[in-house]
Image (cartoon, rainbow, N blue to C red; front, side, top):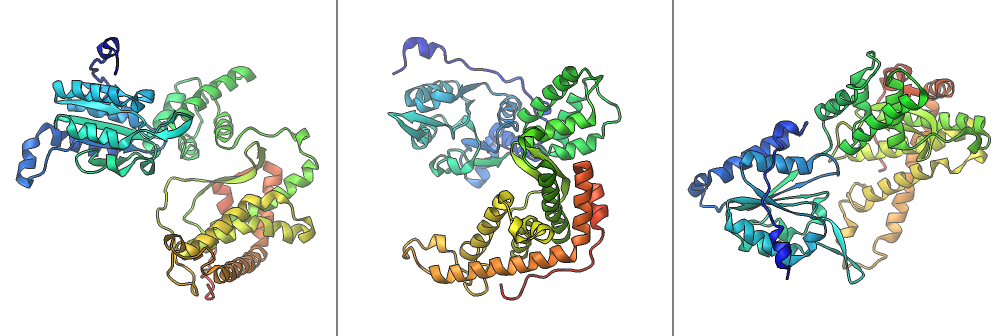
Length: 448
């Protein structure tokens, strides 16, 4: 049991964070406000004969504001709260003491921070005891509301998200455009070039966390000081964004045959970009570059503003063709004997996509509407020969389609490659000018 001294440390807190302090997340804040109305006026629940909700889980990527949203919720609800986090989440006696105190001073809130944290118990990595926490919540005063945070819903045992525990499951997604703009405007409170295109920078930082954006501001300012420059420029911001996302540039002396390497990388990335514009125009491209960085050798940077939870068979096939395009472009330019290892990640992802289409998504014409992973009682070699046959067929058809597209649009690929060799980076507007309007459509081959 915890000592008397430890018990005395349990003190209620008041949150001074408001929803106005949390940038973006409009829909999440709207949902949390509606929950506050319910717990502040439980009489409305009587007409529906349902008990008072006992808790909510905010889940999503790190450094996007989950903790601030939780504390803003507590402030707006007007309650005091007790917090449990870190190693204390593994101490059942401590958790019981917290909920006992919260029950004696109800209505109140208990904040459970990062409940998907891992711990080590007797040399074994273990989760928080979700079932024990669920029992404690269930036995506490009905007017003690629990708000918890986690990175992944999958890592939280359903026993804790069952009714009368964490009733509300609220996803907190990546920073939206308004939030990203707020962070950039905070950075631009420092000395900066007034000609900086804020909207362009906001597009580039899609998917970055608040922690990364805080780092962006510090590193941009430090770069100005290091270089003895006047102020933060657009080029400085773009370079720091690329460093955070893709790593530092590789020194030229670290690359053998640099000129030939850059040339082939230009054709590789140009093919990815051109075929992406033609086959997947809904996926916006921020930039194409042959700038070698610690995390990759040139790349096409996509704007992940919109995430797609559902994907069609045609989109999977087209994505496979885009992935194969880099290798195919090099073959067209230099011949098969010049193949190198630069396409390893592309080919790996293409293979995964094809295998998923066949065995998990039920998208193959001959295999039909199956999901092999769900048939656990079958032998390991169930349909193995047929899957292999169809896998090789998809791969062959995709390779043929990719080669045909690369040859058909070679003029655009070569023009973009030459631009990349000259400028190192080509952005969306210039890329779209090079590709132009493509009137032809490319339906998925009938044999698939």
